[in-house]
Length: 389
Ligand code: PLP
Image (cartoon, rainbow, N blue to C red; front, side, top):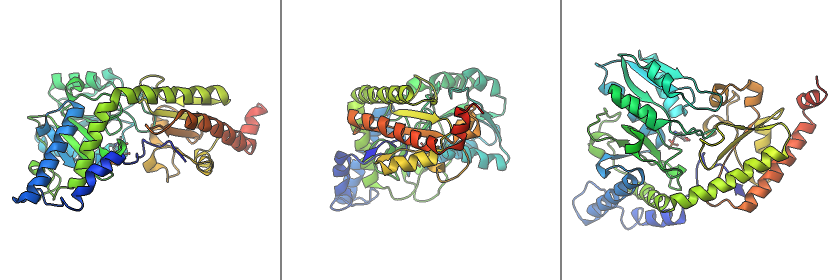
């Protein structure tokens, strides 16, 4: 099987699993207890906090463990606007956010907040000047993702952060798709809040972290025993936290080599597909994209059929985002970059990982070509196009 859907999730690295295992069995203590077993759990957790902080250039005291990217985004957004409710009621975001941000903003909109959803250009990038123009006296939060989960485009976060800082506005970025894949440094990015999820970087599912810059305050969403300095109460998932920490350490040690390797695979895939298949296109920006992302569209093809037929050939890839792939509406991201609905339905997202090989890429290029040809041979739309109708 050739797994090419690492933006949906990644396998747990065997070293990560090995680091986690004792915390289910022998070292199962509650990190809030005073005896040796509890202290051992606390030490492991604080070590993981350092590993996460190191990967993003933060101080360990600025890392708060959560249940994943969705929760980190929710705490960052709802926690900030709740904290600043007396200061203003306006939020700025983009039209291509993950539902963890998009749906949170829509929920807040229903509850009286004003939300500006900034458009993106056809290459999927937010314009810094649009962010600046959208700011009003009421703006209390800007939340723009670091890289998009579908088309992989990387946003000008450092420039947006500079503006937010000059205007004294809290700036959050959802970095779920970038942490561990490209260099992420919270100081260089000028962010106040940054969301991380372990399962996108060879860690386990159901664990993540929120970076909160020293001095920035957010209200918690949950109330309880005061864990994670009151920001995220609940007995800590030590095994998961250890897994996230280990995944961050491995990612940091191998970042440059991984970027080089995966970019070379991605370029080979893009070249093979675009040169080998008629009426095929790359969605997103040619260079400002995640090293592992190649999102294609094929005229007169249905993405769902393509994904299922590739699955039958042992290739796991997706169409639209993983979260919305069970719905029939076209992806909001592909619509936001200006595609017609029919073209948005013909997309294929491949997101590569460290375990993919050159042979996987050769196999995928052939498999995609074969499937596209077969689907087109039975597509009335394609026949009509061919006949110039
Ligand atoms: N944000 C982005 C950009 C994502 O891609 C995802 C997951 O697909 C999430 C947030 C949600 O993260 P989690 O699955 O850890 O809740």
